[in-house]
Image 1 (cartoon, rainbow, N blue to C red):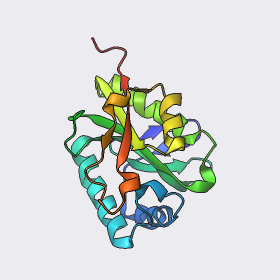
Image 2 (tube, helix red, strand yellow; image 1 turned 135 degrees about the vertical axis):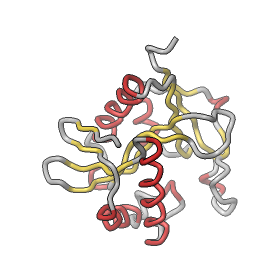
Image 3 (cartoon, rainbow, N blue to C red; image 1 turned 60 degrees about the vertical axis):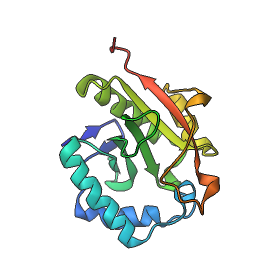
Image 4 (cartoon, rainbow, N blue to C red; image 1 turned 30 degrees about the horizontal axis):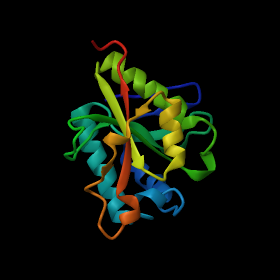
Length: 182
């Protein structure tokens, strides 16, 4: 399994001890605004256990993000295979979720660059995708800072978003090609 380190951050595999801080993160209505609102403890536990299984198979996943200076769990970030069918799948995505008090400090861009490097140089993926609700300006700005590009023809209605949340259905898709891929 994969652990990545940057000057300020550590991204490592999930453990049972991550459930509580991840539940705190997923309880923040502002953090979870584009994910349908706060998640129940049961859903968080299922997400962490599913991520632990996926990281064992895939070698890396969306995994805990730790602030090295303090050891604090501040979010999650990573790469994962996209597990739904859409016009751009099969694909590998890069994604993230960050505690609100750490927004605007460049943490996701910093760890995102490390995951892009890992995806392209170690795993040799030809492309990464990233997607977000069309109104999620913060995530879209990160995608652009990381060098991802957008073609509006790629945008899609996310099939896993419930019909009761129509404002969260439309997603923008950004792509980043591996410069070493032919």
